[in-house]
Length: 173
Image (tube, rainbow, N blue to C red; front, side, top):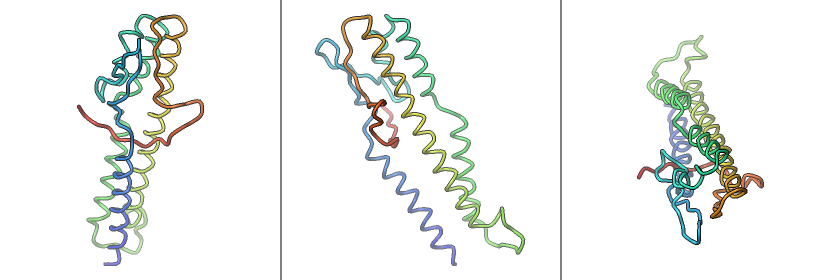
């Protein structure tokens, strides 16, 4: 049973990823200030930015940027497929009992580490894309504020200065 430390390492890394996501800010609590009133930006985790639509739809450029932002926030089947493949590799690696002399791609260590790597890389790529997508919402608000009133005061992050690390959790309402 010299694979027991490998299983412990796998569980520890997965637990670390899950616990790191608990530190993130809640998406549902983002607010913008309009006419000295706070407006909820995210109506739900599936429809982010929708709380600003009433104002942003008055400007065609802002509306187009908001639509693009929401389109990019939709669930991606490729990300789900990579995560499922990684989980399958880990499960197959843990359940694998015998190893022959010529097995390299189907070895227990390769499957477990490969699956863990696939899940980790997919997670960070998805979070990076989500973080970069926030720029579209900020641009939408900026475009609206250039030509319309009342002004919207909203800053989810600061994309120009690069604040934050792309780690977070989703929450259902």
